[in-house]
Image (tube, rainbow over all chains, first blue to last red; front, side, top):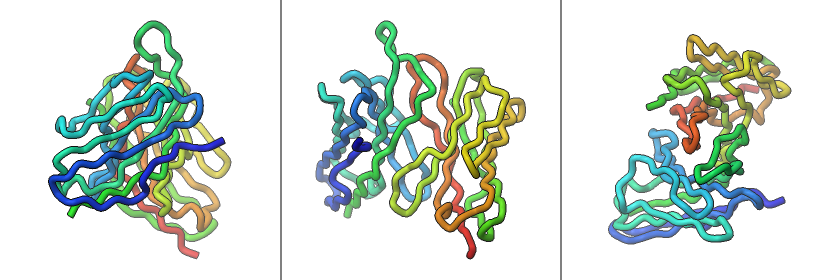
Length: 121
Length: 116
């Protein structure tokens, strides 16, 4: 069974440009999470998508956005790139049980992809 | 907001010896989950071990075990019989049990070196 896949693996962009990163979750997983791992700053939560909707957002400016498609794959878009956006962007997926409109937490872990290394010059 | 602190930026251990990585967290919630993730040079985050806060028994996975002290908000990882393949960054992480709050909150990480 394929794990979480991310593309591209590496990317170099110029300041001010826009970039799109892609993530395919494990089959059967409905939730996708995006994290930024900048040098010396640990992993910071960016976005959480579940069943096509944005469920939660970290403390990042609006130029960080994304979406989740009907097949549960996801894109992370970053507009007006800045030098400090250089980081490893990690995507993770998990399965949630759904009762009502809000996903219920479970003890299922999140599985991570290998990340996209973005360098802004 | 919840926070996770790993006070050891780097640790080293001799192969076959035992090492303990420290982690403390801060939360006002009673329902949550704690995790240790390993990140080797390949960059992929790999789950090492998981602990549910409502369970008093410490989790174990082969050579990996935790010391979960809920009152002290401490969650240390013990690696026994260290192997060269254990060399990696180790991250402690917290996840709320609150409905709709699925994000992981990570510590800053501990770089573990295994000396042959």
